[in-house]
Amino acid sequence: MKIIYEIYGGFKINDNDSVRLPIITNPSIDDMMSYLTNFRDKNGTLILFNNQEEKLKPYKMSLYSDSKRYLILFATSMEDGDIEVRTFNDESGSKEFIPMLGEPFAIASTTKNFSLVIQAFKEFLETGDVSRDLLS
Image 1 (cartoon, rainbow, N blue to C red):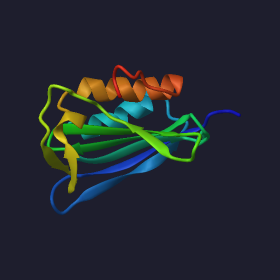
Image 2 (cartoon, rainbow, N blue to C red):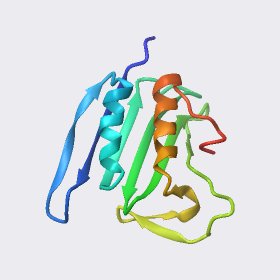
Image 3 (cartoon, rainbow, N blue to C red):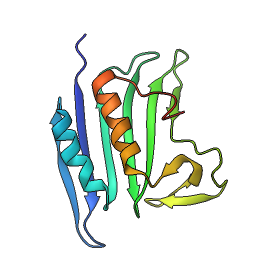
Image 4 (cartoon, rainbow, N blue to C red):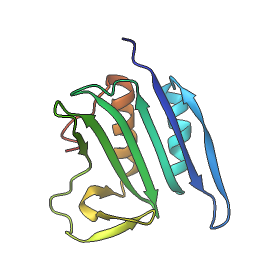
């Protein structure tokens, strides 16, 4: 089966206005990069998913961007029907939680390094997976 990717998302311009990005089917790296750059300094979500929601296959990467801090949730369907979710993991980081778009997440699961976000999205789009060294 051919892997088909779709990318969609939206972001806040300010407290009153938001932008919903049009869905792109089978985005190129350039398409993805043009969407990702919006989230470097805006709060919002971006999701890249594929039609591979089968056992042991990664199928969705979600980005939460809030106050120049970034969280990635990378989902894989497991054999027992559960979902494995991988994130950044700064083991030396704080055990505290911070709000990301109104939801609490561990600070250690976030990054301020936007180049890591770009690297993860590129790997998923190009290979269908992301290194466990990057997202664990």
